[in-house]
Image (cartoon, rainbow, N blue to C red):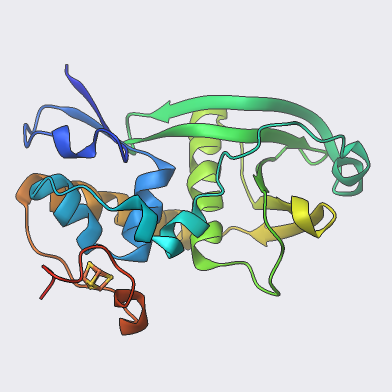
Length: 212
Ligand code: SF4
């Protein structure tokens, strides 16, 4: 079985071999969330992005920056955390996803939750990209540990380690699964997907000159 990874560095090498075991990373999910056509341009036309101009995606890519670990035991305690594992790399063949979770928390009720560090300020809202990324990690934990995942946590380091909780429902997992399915579908079938929801996103997009 051939393993292919859909990441920002290797996505365009993906083949349409239906037997291939394909893995989508959190970074690729972020690209898709910014605009599904990114997947088409990257994976089907093999046109690389001009990273400098992609402010918005880069913004969402605070993902694994600044890996220094913080002593936030007091915060973990507050949410009923009774155990933690740091920097856990996981994959799920069933859902075709893989990635490294900053922290895998065990909560006092026996359920588990991902903790994601954002080296950013909290701007009065949890961005859609951040939310789905956390759900993506939650799905990885559920698959790998076989435990219930009902919550995710995001720690905003530049807002004095402000901790935000996100509740996850079954429909949220289903949504992420369907996004991953579409990413694989676009890549394998090379169809032209819908563009960004908000046209303001197109203003500084690196693909704006070829996107119709
Ligand atoms: S120009 Fe707009 S629709 Fe086209 S790829 Fe960029 S963000 Fe998406």
